[in-house]
Image (tube, rainbow, N blue to C red; front, side):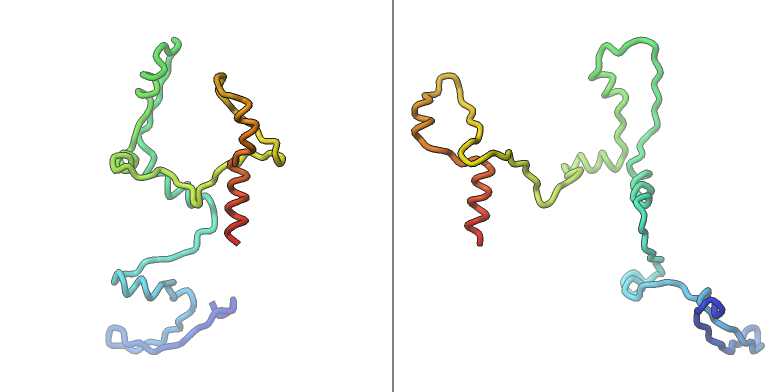
Length: 155
């Protein structure tokens, strides 16, 4: 609206064999994306969604599945059968699992490294291991020391 800082434009239109003047304001403008209009040959309303509730809304219906309720006074003897009976898989999840798509991924991969002081890392061995050879063999690389060695050689 012009009174709220928006622009306006007056035009003369011919409507039903009569000339009328019309003032276009910001209320007459439809937000659009020229690339989407050209690509899909139709109007697609594009808006910014800045709330996490949008994710919940978008994922609610495709993954909703059937509603099931179970009521029982007795205890469950067979937990596996109970789990399988209660589990429902919707069409989208079934398709995703049939084609072995990842349900979630983490990129880049995250690996937990055990932290230790220099030359004081834990050593695990079998009961029949010769401890003399283990001690004389010197320290082995742990995941942490191997990571530090690899990253120092990258520079």
